[in-house]
Image (cartoon, rainbow, N blue to C red; front, side, top):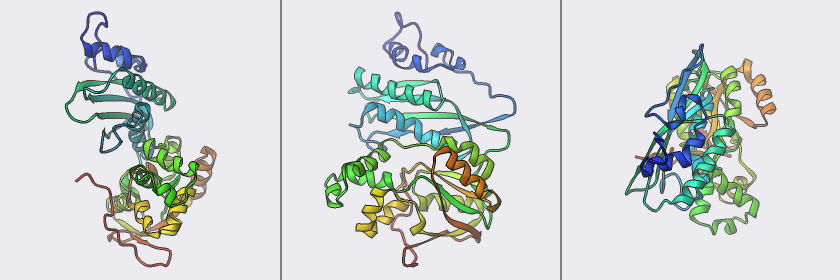
Length: 336
């Protein structure tokens, strides 16, 4: 991403200089005046890298507010850093703009992105801008830092470890249903606050970066929940060579989700498989459980124990309120 000289540069140079150069506050970004950025990790730290693009019509609605789109684009990547125990250090932005994107949209997008970059201490380092005949596509690559050899992987869970999730699950999946079928709010007698909660949880996730240091200190394995608890927990168990049994009744629900599931028990499948939660799923050895709970309480982030890891190589099992096994039609969100 090169800003060039605004007076003499191309239209792309003007766009970058006006909307994105103010976000490039890290000295390694070189004021977006070069083709690359330069970043040197502090001594004794490892870089953790993640890229997760979002596409209009796939990950967000084309008419979503531009600032909300910007926040989602950054936050879905920050969520992965949190799960690895990494603190944000910076990001690259590649954005492909269709011709119907104008100055007002870009102004709001840059404002939302800049506010989140400041809030999460994750400055823009560089990237690229393009035109596209297809849908708006935003690709962010984040850089995080962890003390050397301390990143928490998916593969560290052991028999006896307790299984924790942060926040509440299923809100985004139910929020998407509400967005697609607005009359569901009335059908389930949701009040305005409940409807807004579900819709907001789909539109703008809340990455749990405040928990990163505590995950690194206490967890044996961790990942964020992006494709649904059932699918993502299966990935963690497979990587660790373990299994578990989850009681669906222990999975934390918001008031709004509890109302909907209480009136239609079949919606528990959407809660457990729908994705877009961007909450933390981690395993904690018994000796660290009290410390993890206490640290999360200090951060003001609720964490809930939902099961225990056991030996075995079979897929984890989920049981409903009556103890019967839950069989999911589609255990995980997948693009393919």
